[in-house]
Image 1 (cartoon, rainbow over the protein chains, first blue to last red):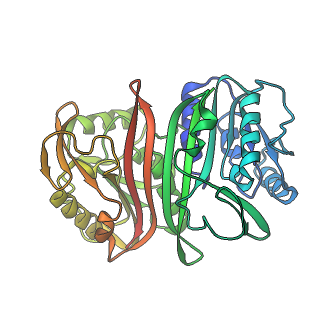
Image 2: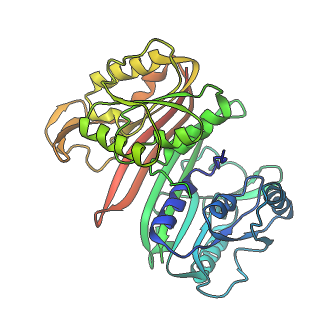
Length: 201
Length: 201
């Protein structure tokens, strides 16, 4: 029985890619961790490539790939300077990852994702919103940008509902979803805020 | 290759059912249509039952089941009076369906869904929110309840963000997601509003 990947919004992206794009080359920016969603795309016949900034997260993803007999093509790298030529991928995404940088670096990364995406290619990217319960927590280092403790200090950048639209002004927004998710996490009810985009170049 | 079902929020419900419930008996209230999500649950080993009010929608679901070699167990019925004993199902859901009734009938239906759900069982139900672009359209027949034209006149009931919480006061809310989805539909950008609940009895 196939595993359900916890990155639920990527099921919509996969559906759109399947329905609207014959190009099966896909890039994940922030591809590491113990449940790498490239595995899902691989099962659907995609030729996968991933970039991961953190060595530990890269190892976790490689361990997952090994134990599932999948070669996901994830390598160490920085999404602000993607080591791929222009218009190389039919599909590019970054899930729950890009907001772990300052907004100046988010912008660089989105420009890079757009650069390596083919014309008419599809892109998913999501942001934290200012609805999130952690927005405002920790030392402020910019415009709704905070240094917050996860296991180590990590930047979290938060966006108002329309703030990120400008990144996609030269693209076509197919889906934009503003989500406020309340859920029980480690015994506590938490409130998370996200804004997900699916766009076409 | 497995089809991706367009009812994306049900992937989270399926994940939670898989992870938190060994009972594989599931009921869909409003189970008809040309892409019945019970098919997804069936693929994951669930013993499926469905109730559908509309004969045409029932036929579409049966046609889908036939062409996919699946017996989904969908029958004509009314979710306000479910023809099942108390505590019969481990999992019950209603997706994009319950809001096509007046609120008095929605309440009856939720009481019925709770009645047929086992203790500790899991339930998914979603509502239209007042953020939806159609809220306010057509003749008002109650409290944010409108008769609107789809192919035929259909009731649509809309909820404020916390209004439906009271249905689940005797249950545990595991996930509550308020979603505002903008998407291109038949060439137009539309704005849909939903509130999804996953609760445990």
